[in-house]
Length: 271
Image 1 (tube, rainbow, N blue to C red):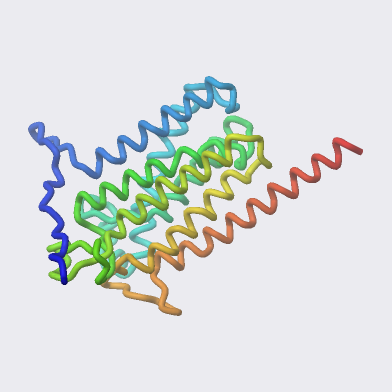
Image 2: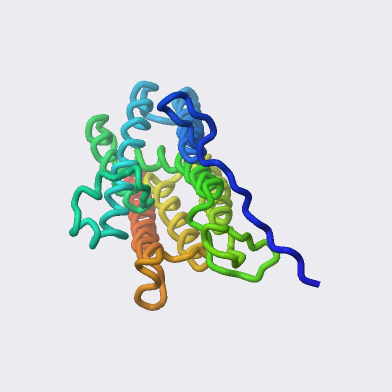
């Protein structure tokens, strides 16, 4: 006996309007993610688990957020809408039309971490290890915001939990936003946070994050609807998968360097 498909409810993307200002679900999710990151970071500083002051952490998170937004927009335009950018360069600044790329945002954050590391006289690996556990919760919150907005839906499916997103047509689709919320948010946070609780080779926590996110994103892309104007690329993989592969590779390289440096220090200490 066939059951009726699950119909995605019409959820207003705007929670409340305050004159010319509007509070949106998507923005609220990012605000929650940033708030959680700040709370967790301050706790780490107060417990003596970070070589930074509370003011430095506040600055790091603020500029890191800006790097994620600017890098995310630039990455989306360069990776997914480059032809449109060539036709109209001002499209880069049309953020009201939507369009953000995690991989671009990651590059923006790394640029901020490089500057922060230089100014605080610590290594990039140290800053990366500190930031890595702060990120997954915000990623999960952002994917939940995508779901509430009824956007970035999955491919068509006949699984019982398939959802009909009316803006995507009459067929049930994978709620890939929730898959990403679970894997890239909850599971990745649990893994990275657990790993960071004990002394590790400097750089290995950040490397684990890169491997974890890249792997989970690569898997979920098999259930996520590719961008219409791009479709599937070489080897039947999406743009998100091609961008995730170097991320996983970078994570492996970072962890290899971290363990090698730790081994060298251990051998020098016992020499």
